[in-house]
Length: 353
Ligand SMILES: [Zn+2]
Image 1 (spheres, rainbow, N blue to C red):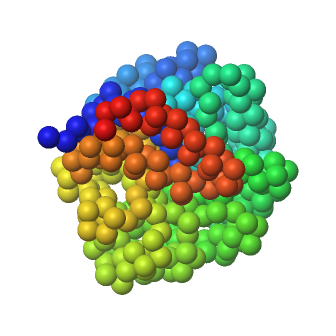
Image 2 (spheres, rainbow, N blue to C red; image 1 turned 45 degrees about the horizontal axis):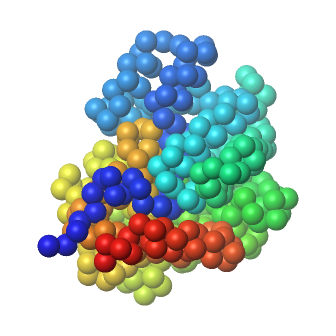
């Protein structure tokens, strides 16, 4: 019988996280720490945070509101970003792309620019403080929020371009398109995304997260994004599905998030990624989306996804290594990551096979 991947195996496995929203990734510990300090110190917020994986969908959305009240200054952005990087590093994530919408907060004087600077400061500071331990490469994808205006999207892309240049393309490597999937017409945001393309930034685009978005998805696919966030309803639509298959555009798959937001059945084996993998060996990358909100971890998501496909340890290892092909970082980083996976294989798995 095949040696199936289990949670413990997935926890020890080196992993790549490509779909993590910064604010939604804050752990309960980080949130409680900030709540104890700040003006939002109320028992209602603590109760919702304390519910962990028993949070309802509505309470999940409430979490975002609480987060917006807590993460209000560049100092807090630095602190929470470092905490999130630490969480992922402890979960054996070796490469992480964090996405987040820069925002202005009048009360603290935080601007989009200082927000982005804070995220980048946290990445650099984490690296300096942890040089010898727990190596993790981190990149930042500024997010275009589709519930905000197209002008704001242009502003975000302009800043992304500027920071990409000032960090020699080492830290800001792309742009994310996300936000409430029901808000506005996604096609309106194609011009700012094309602006990002011209600036040599990669594109990770949330699409077809909810039903009935065929026309929008068709237009967004014309951009030929480098990766698709969720793409939950693409497999039902032959017109758009064939483009994704033909161009082999990777899908970022977040099973727990999809279940908790009620866009897929609870049965993991019926999640859309099983169709893409089993029928077409299509590139799919396992991610968490919002590990704090949905009370999950990347190890947990791997355990669920590998379990749904009945993968052996070797197959699960190969799947996590395959994700390296789809990171937005440069070739040197990819080679270094492949070396990390090969070393892990030699010291942990070679003897088993
Ligand atoms: Zn997402």
